[in-house]
Length: 60
Image 1 (cartoon, rainbow, N blue to C red):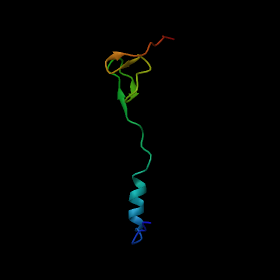
Image 2 (image 1 turned 180 degrees about the vertical axis):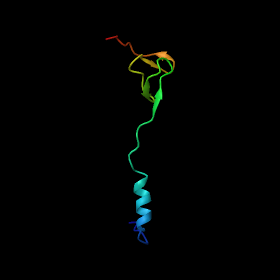
Image 3 (image 1 turned 135 degrees about the vertical axis):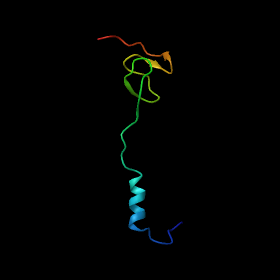
């Protein structure tokens, strides 16, 4: 079984944990309607994904 040879310093521990911190999700604007949408998801307001209509959206 692998065992660390030396103890990690406190700064190394903090650097490792700092990489796991929460980041806000990146939102892209829809090319059709301009609303903010997460990437790889069809736009809920217009129904477009990659320049083609994939959802039928009813107006309220």
